[in-house]
Length: 112
Length: 111
Image 1: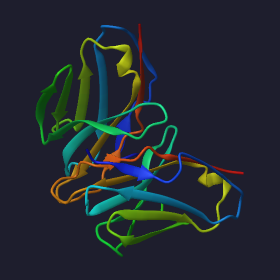
Image 2 (image 1 turned 30 degrees about the vertical axis):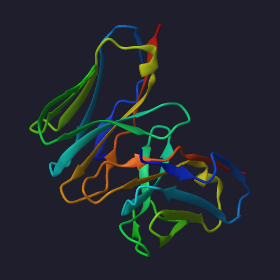
Image 3 (image 1 turned 180 degrees about the vertical axis):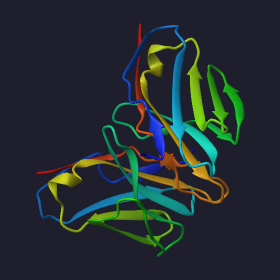
Image 4 (image 1 turned 45 degrees about the vertical axis):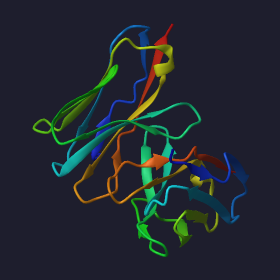
């Protein structure tokens, strides 16, 4: 079974802190994605990566950056956390042969 | 206007009822259509995956795609309390791994 793991289930940070969210997948998938999920807005794509050291902006990249140094790991970075970044963050991966995405359990981030 | 529209509900049905969910979309280039199920405090999991127009059945679940109307549906027969979850539609263009999601419909099946 594909497994996508995220470093934390719940996280509480203060405004202005630098926040790292880690995602690891164990199925050798080429593609990885970061979304945020907010009530009434569904899943919105923040960044994605089709290969190591490659990254592309999604629909809402402002205030975020990413890093993909290894194929299995995709990190989301909040350079200076703000209260409007309080959200559920979901990581996903998929192989190049299809576009079925496998999701991690999510990290619920609260910025105070 | 959002690219994918989905009524957020909530939807509450008695056990054994048929649950009907749907999404509309505006981008005629979408070719792949998916339904994800998300239980509370969990990540979404793929439920149904269809390509282009037509029907697909898997046990109690049926997915329908009508590209001419830009409308997709998911039906759940003989609904069970374990079907209580948020259902998200998602779609993508050919040769594009990015998915566009609906807002999700929250379903509660009452025992």
